[in-house]
Length: 115
Image: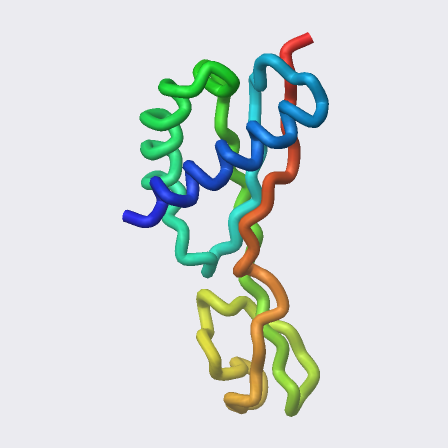
C-alpha cells in the first residue's frame, strides 16, 4: 500500500507550510485526487487516520478528498471523453491516438487552520 507513503509526504508538506506560516494546528485538509492517479481513496483515508493521529499538527484534522474526473483527448477527431469508461480508445471515432488531459492529479487544494 503506497498510500501510507503518500500520507507521510502530505504531512511533510503540511509541516513545511505550517512552519513557514507559524501555524500550530490544521483542522481540515482538502485534496484533489484524479480518478486514474493510482491512489485509492479509502486506503488513503485509512492511512491518514493512522498517521495523522501521531502528529500534533494534524492529529484531529479532517481529510476531504475531491475526485477529479479523468478525461482524455482524441488527436484524430478532436473530442474529449471519459477515460475510465473508454480507456485509450476514442468512443467517437475508434482512434487510439489519445492522451490524458486530466485525472492523474494529486494536489493539496486547501488547508484550514484553527482560528
